[in-house]
Amino acid sequence: MGTVNVFEAARLEKVSRVVFPSSGTVYLGSLGEGLGKIDESIPINPPSVYAATKASCEFMGRAYAKRYGFEFICLRYTGGLYGPSPAALKATREIAIQQMIRAAVKGESTKISWPYGPAEILYGKDAAKGTVLAVLKDKFKDTLFHIGNGIMLSGDDIVAAVRKAYPGSNIELTKANNPMPYPDSRLASDFSRAKEQLGYEPDYSIDRAVIDYGETLKRLENR
Image (cartoon, rainbow, N blue to C red; front, top):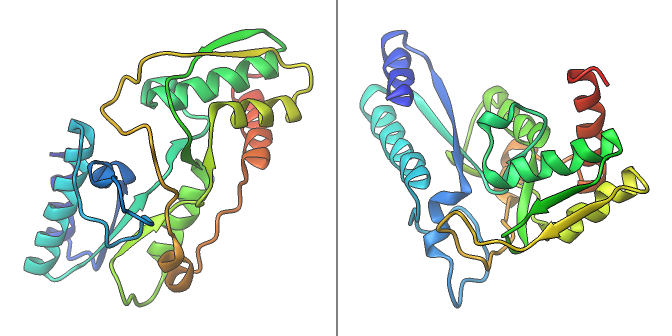
C-alpha cells in the first residue's frame, strides 16, 4: 500500500516522473538451464513473497503511468544490497556482511552462518548512484534498467576482502540452510542498458566497499 500511496501522490500532484526501486529477486524463479545472461528481457517469476510484492509494484507503476501520464522508471537492483544501515532493515546476507565488518573493525573474532552460494552483491552507494542518474536523466529510450556490477562473489571472497582491509581479522564461515526460496546457482547481471542510457558504472569493488563500510561504521558507532 505504501507504494500505491506514492503513485496516488504522483497522480494528484501531477508529478512527471516516478523512479521505483525494484529488485533482482523478481526474476529468480526464471533462472534455469539454458539461460545465458540476465538482462531486462528476462521473464518475471518471483519465488518469494518479497519478490512478488516488488513484481506487483512494477505492474502497478506501469498501469498508473499509462493511465495518468507520468513516467514510470523501474530500477532493479540486481545484486543483494549491502551497506551500513540498521540491522532491522536488512536481509540475512546483509546482516552477515555487517557482522563480518563490524567484528573486523572492533578486532573481535566472529563465526558467521553463511548458507549462500556465489551471487552478485551491490553496495548501497552504487545503488544510490544509479537512482540519482535515473532521476536526473532528461529522456529515456527504455523505462526498465538493471543496476548491478556483474561480479559474482562467494562468502570466502567477501571474507578475503575484509581480511585485506583489516589484516588479522578472525572470521569463520559456517554452513547453514538457505532461509529463502532462492536458487543457489545464479548468473551475473547485464547492466549494459543502464550504462548506455543512464551513464551508470559501479564505483565500488568489494575491496573499496569494505573499506568504506568499515569507516562509515566507525563514524556511526563512534569507534
